[in-house]
Length: 425
Image 1: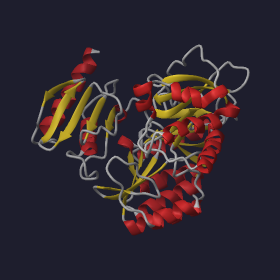
Image 2: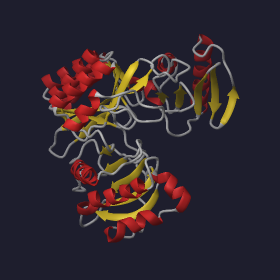
Image 3: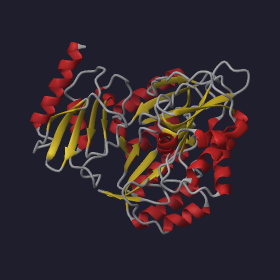
């Protein structure tokens, strides 16, 4: 972490509603200050364990991996957030506190010959030199087409590696995920960082609230194409969206493996993560990687070691089976952890998960109307409001309000509905 980021952390104040929490700019929430780190590569296993120790020492011990693969540390104070920043600086964890860039979790485990982590580092250096002033939530996705897909992540600039090309190239789109973003064309891997910064400059020129999706909706992609110039080739096809599973065994190019385990509803206590990291290290793992779908990857390890590590993770309460009902429920922090939450979303999620079978159902529990845990409409949503909670079935509001948002009646009602739909399917 840069000295500038460290100094900023020492003067950090709670962030306004709608802004993004960063290590240098913590955000006030229901259980104190919250910071978010967007890693840009593999974290040494010892450094990851030390990071978890710092979360317990300086915060309340609650850690989260978001749906985008970012790390959040909760329960900080203004003073402890400063100490946390100092500790993380000493750990030399690869991240950048300015422009969030989501990169493929297992670079090198693909035949595309694209290194998204290297492109990310280059574009960040370029952006820093140009001093681009961007909206807080502006983000970039760089997907190498490997075993962990980033297609579902929305971003202002979205790059996805193309397979079957003679030279490493990426498809470029703006203002959404791989299905909703506006396509621009194809760029070579060598020019990807420069092109991305030129596209970000379009947003910077639009002011500190400009987002790519708004520019596209208002005026199309003309300004982006003009900024790209001859760095872009015309794309004949838009890449088809890929869905990949982050939990389980992932084979790497060197015949070793990584294992993915998910945090229940995206949250775990630092003590459990410390224990998992130490078990992984004792079994030969050298690094940890944060991945989308609230997943932690550990490696490199052998296949039999992965089985043993998965068993240990299961014992510690992590999600190791993609069919686990907890995997089908997206729940935000909710009350009392989040100041905006009206219902204890994760407590409610855990109680419902105990009562439903494995299946392909999808449930979203949102503590308030912001819907942070699930970016798209879910088949069934429990929404927290001031008076209690309501059901939203697809786009239809079934009934609002409920005065007792987490009563046994509500839990049983939701469980019965999920079970009935699973049986009908």
